[in-house]
Length: 79
Image (tube, rainbow, N blue to C red; front, top):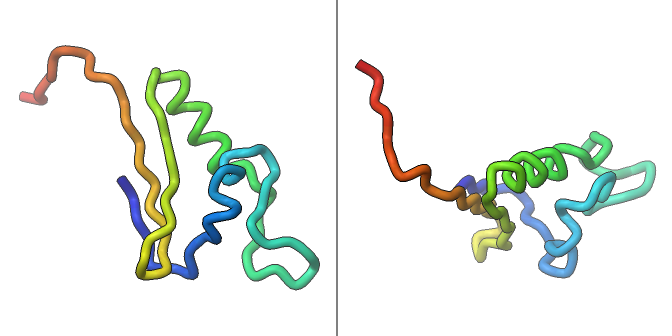
């Protein structure tokens, strides 16, 4: 999981966060730049690995992203 302590995300937009080109804020005076593809790319990668991703609004105003990936059944350790 990854969490931040930023402004957070309105719970009403959580279902759309992973949609291509979606941005929680819009208009010429929006606070953050970007085209809305970062979270879409993450979701596609997680999907290809057979996992899942979800976002949750935190009570402290931040947002938490939780990624779950399947186990391969073995763990390799570097020597």
